[in-house]
Length: 168
Image (cartoon, rainbow, N blue to C red):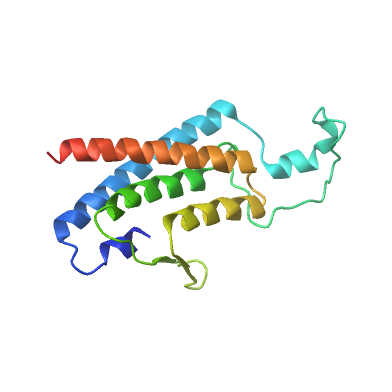
């Protein structure tokens, strides 16, 4: 997605270097924050909750021992959504970049999905698709995606502040 912006005509090497450095630093900070949060809260994933609905203390839930998510469940706690924090962090940095010029269609190619290409006309559409994919895939709850997005936005803003402070 960042390459979509960096490949725009008229961008110079220095601007792209700063962009990639800011995004990389922000994503590193986001990963540290999300993993710290995941292990601080240690919430179970949907697969565990659904398969153990009979022992969760809520009389309104039932157990479905055969339920499986659509995608493989990560081997770390559920909350907050790591994919969402990363997507929102990247989007926040790219939105700041867009203040200087319009963003192109954003796209990425998956090396693991036979070269499938995903494209978005806006950063918000990108962030929302990431969140929805994690919910529909069965590995996150909506609240976790919303919190991940909010964390990512704040971390992206913090990274931009640090990046701009160092650029002077």
